[in-house]
Image (cartoon, rainbow, N blue to C red; front, side):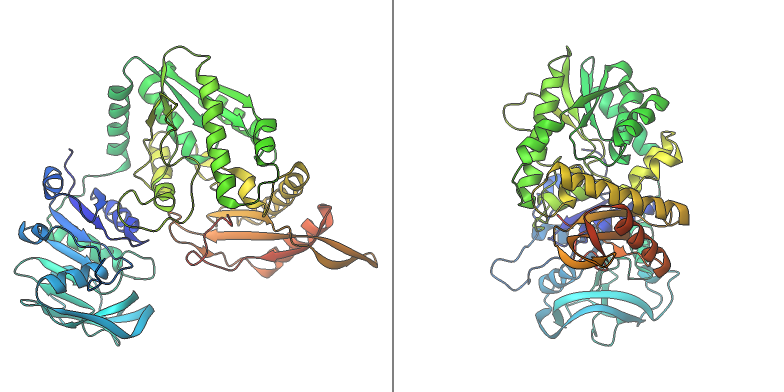
Length: 512
């Protein structure tokens, strides 16, 4: 195993992956492992510190998640976050009880020991984000209070002789104003890690890994024209040259003019691209299917079959490459710890038993913002990297209910209008992702003095950094009004447009 400066034990928090990302932003490589990772496997990574994540359970419950007690005896610096704090308190003789009032939201952190290395270069009374139903009621042996909030007398505690720290709040989330600095302080000033990890070193490492894994064989890379698959294809082209077979599948669920744009993009990069027309196959299998999970699984299985057929046309293909991201993995299946499944992603979960390919997923452990940095490192043009994310299942998960040609056409036209307005006003570049959703909810309207009973389009525009959390974008009302007016005027079958003002969580970015 390779050296990993910071190990994050995952106890099921939906924020766990953000901890790793924040550390990487500070140049410190980290990996997430299950909460019950064997001590031998942890030590094999030669870490300089351990972080215990938050989680949904209660430490005093019979079925609560507990790590191997040996982690507290390794002599390594430890930082516990929320549930991790409660584990530390329980292990060292403190008391954890249900809180009289659950605490969710912003709080103000007041230092009780401003000289703690955890607070280096931080300012007092900054905003932090609380999210907990239990609390430490009695301080564990050897610990002191280093920070409090109005509702949490033990907001931050430490045994600085043993280099063990614990926080009741979540420093990793955006709302904790100085949270990134706290994590950086733990890694650099307490664990003594150096900032040696960046996208340049990651690119070199992945290129070398791909060369070793592939040898003289060939790799089939499924591309969509989106940022993720484009970066994967470029990385593979750097590593193995003409041993790469790039395949673009037109599944009938793409945006307007997507096929032509993808082909032009790959031609510009000098990467050969095979385009497979599988529109009838995909739409035939999706006919009459309205359940979101079923749609996703059908699309994923059909992609694999199409790739298998294409691979058999070429000698020596033994690998299938995909643009799977960390966020896809986290939302699909708990591979690192007891996190709850949010929704399945078409490119997560391995290959069916009947396939003999070996998977190559060089982006599986990084986030969307890191993918863009990697693409820039590889020389991809800004225009390509600045494209908004587009889901693998395509427009199928932006149509509520079953998918058909007529609804796809309506959705494409609405999407073109919305994107045209955003580009012309400069808001495409100011937002992370924007798209339209066909709700298949009809309502009464009036056009030209006539009654209408037509469909509803929802406009969804969000800001995010990694897709794990997102807030709806504050688009000026006159721009939203233009989008609404043009969609209703230019897209037959639509008489109402709504704007989605929910954030993630509790909602997800995509509707299905």
